[in-house]
Length: 494
Image (cartoon, rainbow, N blue to C red; front, side):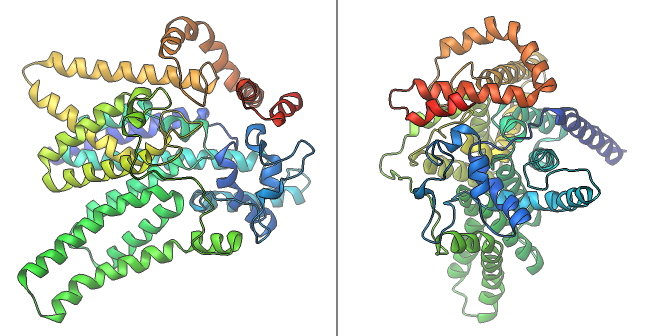
């Protein structure tokens, strides 16, 4: 009977999550913008041209992306080309790899319909391609949440895991990159991290060689999608160090035991490199070197922006998405419950946090919240679930405490939705710091008057609304003291 009830509750949670995902699919915004131009260029150029020629992507890009890359006369600037004659596309190839299973058949259908006289441009920019790309991103974002839910459910039960998953879904930055900016890499990054973490935990210490192989392939894909995800390799690395340290303590001199322990680790490393080959090959083609990433930003390892990353008005992680402060606090609660796993998750977060704090563009430039941390979505779900589970256990005789906790999460979700609306419609600047007084004023006084009309326009004339938002962004750029003359040209043209 208990097993039947568990299956019933599981079925309810599964249906609810899937239903919410289906209901929110009309929110997907099929456009390629900003960094997404580079991510999408790989699959588009391969489908259309059969090579990595990204010239068309740079010329077709949104105005703010073209600035500094394309002249006012429509010519790609000379510094945008590498020594190999390719466009300097330093963005990762992994998102295109994940879009490929959806876009390849769509390309075939479009070509077939074009031969039948439908006249749908098979150029990668027409609506079938962009809608497919956007839906695929939403699908990967949902899988990230689903796998995170499965992990949290194992430790805290379905009700707590479900509440935590929904709160992170709608209370964090994931929402933006799952629906509004689907051509960026962050929703896919959350998916591959969740997949790696889920499979690493599911297979445990007694992995077969096949499971080590699959884990390595998943790890390589995780790197293909987003390079900072390399921090997550601390999980298997800690396992390996613990195993090897045990052998050293035992002073084992039996080659068979060492081979039994070290052989799977070697297989994992080889599989990771094999899965990472698409990145290495594209770098060789574009830059003429397997290990040239194309990124030229600086890293300040001895002067990290630790406080700014969390609390700055310029896309601070906790200041922009406060629900994540609760999630991170919950990771430390989880550490007390699960010393090994909890400690490793805290270690992964702290290492990722330090890495981003040392980065030149730690604020993400044009970002909602600190977009780099979207990769850690499964950690946030587990952390928030741990915190909620602690409240639930403490409040068994104090039901009001559980209700207050859920009400606080609901308020944070509504705040986040309103803030996303402000950021997306340029009520607050997409780049640089925001005024919290203005944000709060907009939430209370402006949104009730404009939200319905803007949302209606989003569903009725999304393309026109995106052009309006792009013009607002260009005007903000033009208002900056050192704005280039090309900004004014782009404003006039758009």
